[in-house]
Structures are given as structure tokens and as C-alpha cells.
Image (cartoon, rainbow over all chains, first blue to last red; front, side):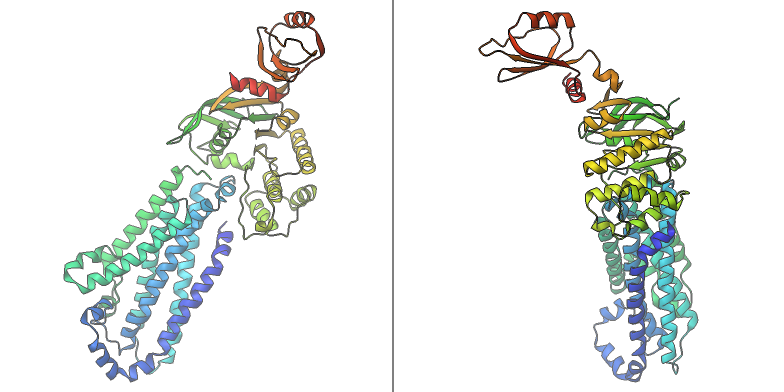
Length: 264
Length: 290
């Protein structure tokens, strides 16, 4: 069953990997030019409204430095696009069976519901890991193109680790939604909405002190690039928070699915 | 103990009725009909037996095992054909069947044999198949792992008469091997043709479990009388049900004393009369109107 689920989702993994990898590569490949024109860029940045600079975390990271550039531009893509992918994948993977009424086929087989979920969750995990591996690999290749600039590999690895956790967080919430809903349309729109709303919340919390309470609500804040690059660690509180969210979502998914009446 | 034992099985949905206190038992090796109109609770019963949905109260066992606790064990030896067959559209027939087979130990030969019998094109995409051809995939898939119990939910829908015949042949062959068959349907003639015993379900409640023979021989007779022209068509007798008049022909079901029927017929001027075994259809209507 793992094999089958793997195959079914392989195509979309490939497309996402190519798109994300391509974007990462393109972004990194323009860095040398970007760095050369740094003075002008700094000027340009200064002309931007301060709120916008804060929103993208550019106040704490230097765009002229490769690590900082990665933290602002590339990281935004891996976290946001990757989360969209993770949420969509997880939201569809269980609900699709009910949506297409194929669950009737699966449930008639000698397999428990717990095994069904485990297989599907494993596929999600593996796909997310592969997507991140691709993006890391492309980044490393991209750095070769800007050899003359220093990059803190430790920061990059930490950022990648943070991204993986972020993706798992969204995937687990979406997975939970997926077991609850009967229609993929509902599950994936909820999950996507969650990704965008929390992303937006993260920006808001950076801009305004009054909204800073939002930072606990948004997983994007948990993996904010600036503190990771500047302090070379992921805040343990946020790590624990993500692990708790993941565990609760997955356990609830199992409990709900076990008790669910599946009528097609 | 039967292969399937259902005791006071009840499933209530939030708003509408599911099944209420259904109790029956299926013996090893029999073909057990399960009949009722759409919405009577046939599919609900089957889905509860397969643990797609959980019973509100009551219990049931298959092979002596609890349907909720031992669902996985039970499914190993159960073949299920749903009323509407839905499969993964992106797969070819052969892919689906191999996928299905991967859950059990199945020989390739069995797969080929079944597909050949049913004249199934294995290399077509499932989304390109007609309703009847999908059903055939469903049949192969249900029979593939040589289950000891077959649960068929309105299995003949979409099959042409020739294919239906082949399908019934297959079922009878399986029965000879000792397979028990649970056959749900709303088409009486096919139940009559195939089943040993039949349970009638109406509005979520089981009305009667009878052998087909008993059901049709339950003293119930189908009577047709053709009166002579201009006769008063009066026929009042205790035990007459479902009286219908069409022109000078009168049909009815009669379950009273035979002698009284004959006596009354004797006193009338009639052109023609026939007294015959009722069709299951008649019996069925009779149960439903009670």
C-alpha cells in the first residue's frame, strides 16, 4: 500500500521539487549581481517603508551577505511554498479516498484503519523529506556559483531543519483535517487557508508591537530566519511547540479515523 | 453457530433511520438473500458487518469473530462487491487487481481465469470503463482471494443478461466449494433463482427470514379469474388480499381455506380460472402491505 501511495503522489512531488528547486537556484544565481550592486540596493532598501522591511525580516539580516540573502529570499520560498505543498499533500491523502469513494475498496481489504493512516502518513513524511533534500541540494549547488562569498553552512542546515519541522507541522494539521472531512475540496482549502493566514499573521506580528501576540499562533514565526542565523540555534520553546502540535494532530487523526463512520 | 450471526444489530444515524434490531444468522454454504426496496437498510447492514460504520447497539459475528474487534481478520476471508463500484481512476484494470491481490495470497492463474470468464479487458484504464465493465472488475476483485464468505450488494446492476448468467454460474461454483454467499438485492426474480433462504427487510426492520420454498408455498395462491361478459364481478371471501380488476379479469392473492375458494368459484359463471404459486414479487408485496 505504501508503494501505491508513493506512486500516486510521485508526479506531484516531482513537479514541486522541480519548481521549488528551480526557484531556489534562480534566486541564488542572481546573488552575485545583487551583491555587486549592494550599495544601490541598500539605498533602495532604505527607501522602502520600514514596515515592509520588518515584515520580511530584512531589518535583522543583511541582504548583502549570502547567508542573510538566503534567509530572506530563498527561505521565504522554501517555507511558504513547501508548506503549501505539505498541507495540500496531507490534506488530500486521506480525504481523497472518501471523496472518490475508493475507501470502500480499501476498507474491505485485510488492513486496519490504523495501518491505512500509518502508510499514508509515512508517504507524507518521505515526500516532505525528499522535497527538502532537493531544495538543500540545489542551494548547495547554488552556493558554488557564488564561491567568492562566504556562507554559514551551519545556519543553512539549521534553516533546513527548521523548514522540515515547519512542513511537518502544517502537514500534521492538514492530515488531521483530512481524516475529519469527507471532501478533499474542504480539507485542502482549510489547510491552504491555514498556511496563508498564519503566514500573514507572522508578517503582522513583525510589523506591529500590538500584534506581537500573534507570533505564538503562527508556525512561520517559530522558524523565523533572523534569530536562527544570528544565534545559530532554533529556539527550543518553538521546537517543543511544533513537536507538541505535530503529536496532538497525529494522535487526534488516529483517534478520529478509528471511530469514524465511513459512508460513501 | 452460523458463518454470520447478527444479534439485535442497530444503527441509528443522526437524522434518519438506519437499521433497528436486525437479527439473523447465515449457515455455512448457503446462499442467503437479503431483499428490500432502496433505503430499507440493506447497505447499512452490510457496511456495519464490514465495519465501515459502527453499530449503535447490538452485535454481530462473522466466522465467530466480532465484526468490530476482529475486522481485519474477518476481511481476509470475505469478498465484497459494493453496489456502486468506485476505483482509482488513474489505474489500469490489471494494476487495480494486482494491488488488490497484494493484500492477500493470490495466484496469478486465478486472476487470469476470472478475467477470462468475465471477458474483461485488463489493459484498459478504469476511468474508461462502462458501468457494467467496472462491475466486472468488482466481481473479479471480490472473488480473487477465494473468500469463504461473499458479500454482494446488488451485484447484478449494469450487467447484461449474458454476463449475469456467467456471474450466477460463478456463484454456484463457489457455493459448491463451500463458500457462503450473502446476496443483497431488490430484484426478486434473481433472489428466487439463486438463494436458499431470504430475509426481507423493510424500513430498517427485518420482517421475515424464510426459505424460498416456504415463502412461496406459504398457502399463498395467486388466483386469476376471467368472468363471463355482463357478470357481476363480486368476489368476497375471507383471506383475499390485493384484489385487482382489469376488464373482466380479476387477480388476487388468496391465503384462506382452499375449499371455500373452490366452493365460491363453483357458484360463479366464469370463463377461465387459474390458481398458481405466487411469484416472490406477490409474496413480497404482501409482506410489505402488512
